[in-house]
Image (cartoon, rainbow, N blue to C red; front, side, top):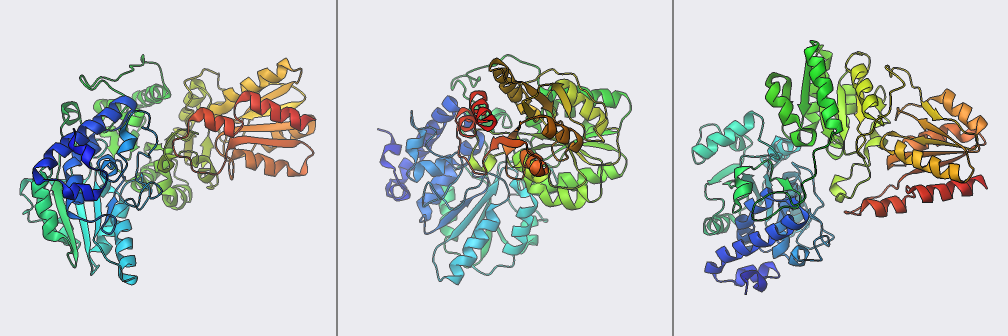
Length: 581
């Protein structure tokens, strides 16, 4: 019998004999590895906090004592100990969120999937506790590079001025997703090497009491420390040294690769399904950058702690002086990158859609208002099966409504090359290229300049006009082919531009066609299709928009979403035939 079999709630952790806790840690580690090796998931972050999580639930009284996780990609042990271990059993792997969720359990308090939030959230709960005469400890856990985000500094600054119970745990595993970047992490290194006694201490500078724990994967030591500071009447920061990937050698030896992993063989650590290497849009981007550098262009690649998403480690190895990883600091990358462009260099800023939204103000106030000619490469802005916290479908709606930005949607390798070449040669506007995510395609680029908004008509018909934006142009092609078989002719349009309309082409299509349909890989409200429909409001043509509803989805399979949104060609055809009737 496993020790974990005895545990269904935090109270059960308290009931165990102390000598059973190490066995519990191994059971939890084995349970996590079973799940992530089968279906993938965050490996290193979860393995590194097993002992800390056991100690937290041994000492504190959740949910009266509130444990707030930053990012929450390290909450698997917490979930296992708070009544959700069923989600780590065969047939139930997808029954729980990979992140914290108050909809799942009274032991969670926020849906969180982005960094640097825990201290601000904890401080808010502490203030609410004080105002409502509540009880309990408030514990914020931050780590995995989250201290590089500006919100963390804002929260630390305010925490230093707070007068009540607040426990901040810095889970220091000397890593972000990749390695840490920034001068602050040198201070953390000094603190580690001095066992917390370095003369300079960034946390004390914020006015916080500070305590260092070297043995961050030692349950007994952690229990001792937590008991010492439980019910403290002022803020304290406990700096705990842990090992990312602790207990699984492959994850310890290659921490970046094992931050998140697809399904893998538990014995060897090798991916269960090795896909053959195929050419990708990342390869295209790298080839353009190399060509520009060879031509003497002052290219610099900038990213916010996600080099793996764009294979940027390869670029950094070749051109260390042309690579800048800001750590998890999305806002900084935009203002910094825009200023690099204003200074005459050619920055390419790489971002995942769901993370870029954190820099909305910088996109508006700094980049666009100043017309700084930086280039942003946007990945992940598609309808996907991700968690609520990582949906990329919002990108088109908010980016497309920022003035001055040229927002482009290539459908092919050739168009991507043409757009990059133009963006890196012009000096008038910032440019965002929204990468397609449905496999590399080949289609000649009709244009070499994108200063003016011109749509490309690739096929002419008379009944229906189909506008397929970016990665969903191939979807429009499939719809066109099915309509042809029904004797309905269609004009096929590649818009190329997301935020600006080719009004001349739209007027012509409205006059000569009965129905116009748009297809986009994002939320419809405020997006491309609605802009088209709004412009054509005074024309007799019927307009249909195909894209995502404005909603959050928790790991819903893409085929199910496509069916829901009528993005499946046969469903779109049925709607179009209905509009023609």
